[in-house]
Length: 115
Image 1: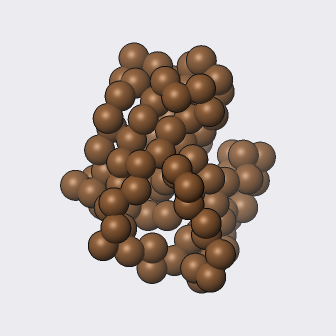
Image 2: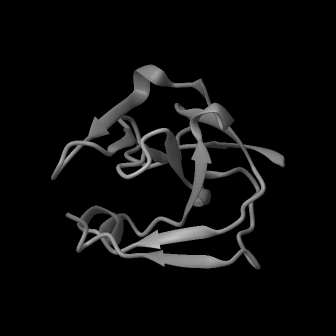
């Protein structure tokens, strides 16, 4: 397991995750398609918000189960609490410091047809 830190664009939100990156995921639901993020699934006990709770803003839609977090300063989407597995975070790997996703398997998630 490796520990990685990350942030939004302006640095107001800082976080850390611990994962071995078994896979990355994309999703075709209406929000993920628009934000075009590449995600890693992290259990909540391996996610730590280091700074910026006051800079987070939340967006929910459809069933209002998933919680999508954005920086209210720069608008970047660093992570969300997952709908199907709410005890996990989906973390946008493009927000991780000095991280190269090359070589990690990518699985396409079918979200647009989710009930």
